[in-house]
Image (tube, rainbow over all chains, first blue to last red; front, side):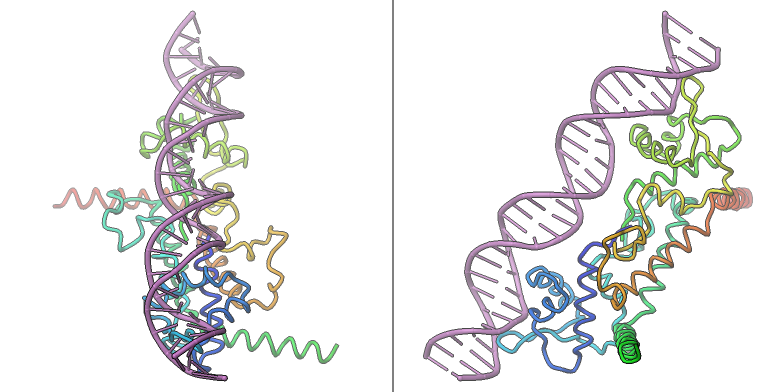
Length: 150
Length: 150
DNA sequence: ACATATCCTACGAAAATGCTTGGAATTGAG
DNA sequence: CTCAATTCCAAGCATTTTCGTAGGATATGT
């Protein structure tokens, strides 16, 4: 039940873009530096996100990437589905899968994975990039408070 | 976010043992046949479950495996943790991981994975093998009903 | 004695992962 | 116009993981 680095790093990158939303195109180099990730590898990940319509790119000098929609309109689930494929612990609970298990109707273990799938989906689709930015801001304020009074 | 076949097949095997609980040791060969899995491969999976104390074995002719506890006392989460390792989409939300991310305290993406972890754990630990057996029985009855009246 | 089992170790093919490499195309700034 | 910054694209590649298979040793009821 592990996420690959695609989903892991990719969400970090999208969060970074969300934090700089409205500041024009952000070069991937700066994202990679802040998030301490390989720029070339990030490039591959963000390529998929662009094709999926989640980010927009501006080529050439002073170019970079921006979110294609407002942070409030991008769910973590949207990002993860692009980078990791369908959210489904086993193939037989993947709706898009044509040749799923014949026993599907009366398969009890399948029911377990269906519940897990629903549960993960619920969490990922309930969090937007804006939510994450607000969390970050809260954490920042809490940290300042701490530093000031101790 | 995929489960490996270890967790997938392993849970099927445990469910099979649960359905035959109280009938003495069940040879792996019969489990493998019913669940349509490789016996040799299942052997490796159940070996881990035995070492973890979830199943007991009886060697020799007329031997086999039985659950070490009642189906009601074995949670799906127990089985999955043995077969798949800690339930944690990324390492930095794995409590057992010593060298987790330094930024842990103020990492916003980490919070997302923490929520996902909690959500999966909640589901897997809320279902016991007995629950699965009851579901199977319900499905069986519903199916008979259907076959009888149509 | 023998058939039926568990137990154990090792091997191995195939796929996925996590990048790196190298270069082409685009474009704003000097 | 030139140059540096940047996206875009395709391929390669080492490592790890996955998903088993193979072969045999050990135990035990009949």
